[in-house]
Length: 547
Image (tube, rainbow, N blue to C red; front, side):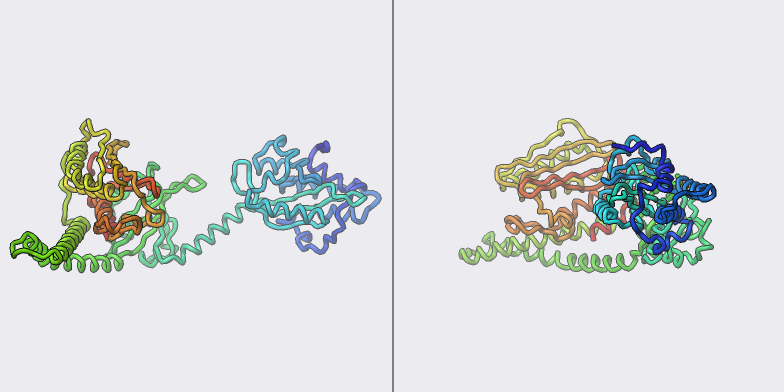
């Protein structure tokens, strides 16, 4: 039952004049924090009160009482005060408590103080209760939580109160909000961390593009000091910088359609990969945050690797084609009859030469797409017809695995601006992949749908699925997941990588959902209307994906 107390100030005042209640037997002079005001202003007043009670004066003269009242008023105005009973239930709070935590008085009174403790601090709450019950006060930093969930850091001192017979009857908590100090420390720590990053970090205004922060790596590239970069813009650092092009590129961020953008720009002969984000500060100021990573060396190494693979592939294709043709002639009987053993060995060699030629052709296709030498032939294509053609082309292959193809939402035309041959290759790769890893008698479902400005192609199978540990690398080159009969299915390990590169070359994406034993759905998202700049903007990303 709540003790009717007019206010927290009155409750604390009562400690001064009520001889029936005494502080725990603590030597407050041993606590340095009680010796000064400032952050300890509030605890100092409480300590003064405790000392007066400990000395048990028979009465207070007028001057002494006024002095105590002044101290307690300072306590009530400048700090967050609460009074709890022996069960840690809130009895009363001052107005600053209500203002800080956002609760109404009726929501607080009768509830346990743990109401303002976040889940992560509940164990600390129990430790503090144990210490108070044993007769000790508690002082330290506490992370608490407002009604809205906002974290509130406080410097807290809690005093236990005991009755004459030694029972713990109440506690008074005196808190100072130090959230702003904590935030300032956090911001300073973050700045120190950013300064040590090898990547360049830029923060600039979303309207004027004026820099408000650069880390050390960014200042080194620009050749500016901290005093010099403030007020400057990217136009001052990058020759030929196009402000309008930047704003156009950043539109999806400003509109909230995307959380971040990644693209590559050339600056003074270096290739910088930019990760751009749009943020709003607590003061309402809109800013861009850009992380720049110099990938010139990485791209050079990867290009050298691509060039090497491409050269080897070109050099191997001609002799392999001759070998394959020669083996085919021998198997056809052009050189005479073959023994069963010879025929078996030659058939194995012929199948392997087929596989090698397929790998080489896939590598060369990837190299062409990634390098931009294989340009998109954008025309207005009816995807419904293209899907039907792809299904017909793969019908015999699927029949080999006893799989049927079912088409959904392909009765009506679905017009998309794309390269028909490359999108056909996407469908071919996904359909053959689905057939190989389905169970005999299953079906593969291909469907079309629209989603705003995009068209979705979905290819679903009900087969073995992709193990969780393999999903992160499923689009990498030469990836073949170890598992049920996968080697016997054949393949180069390049099919899904080609699908990804072609989709991204169109300005689209490819994603998948899979559960082991329940099948996989691949979803290709293509812009319904091709962007003139899409290929150029994503050329570097396509190169990175292919590599």
